[in-house]
Length: 150
Image (cartoon, rainbow, N blue to C red; front, side, top):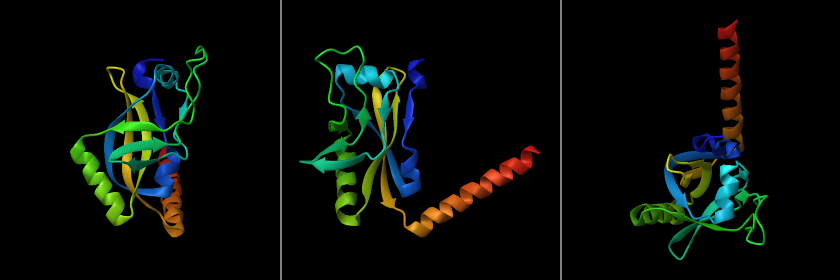
């Protein structure tokens, strides 16, 4: 598997949230964590971001233990710090505090240089009727695609 093939998505996020703005952030990982990510052993399900002392942290990302790791192996569910510019951090923190929006991780990927990056989105939670509408649109698109193929 090539480095650029790693593209771990949080499919549930787009169903539960309406994305307003998206950012690419660096993520601080340990040695065994980056090896597990390169092997594709990570999950973004039920993860979210929060601010602590002006820094953005992500909680709930599951990165499986590296199978060849010894006692240096990492905690699978530990909180990890995200790296953004000071300007982006201030903007996100202001939006989260004032508007009641949240920040959710949508995608974990590797750059061409091998750096792990995480795509985060400033998001607003969808109501139940919004979710039903999303499903209707998705089903209609599937039906149209099927009709075009036949």
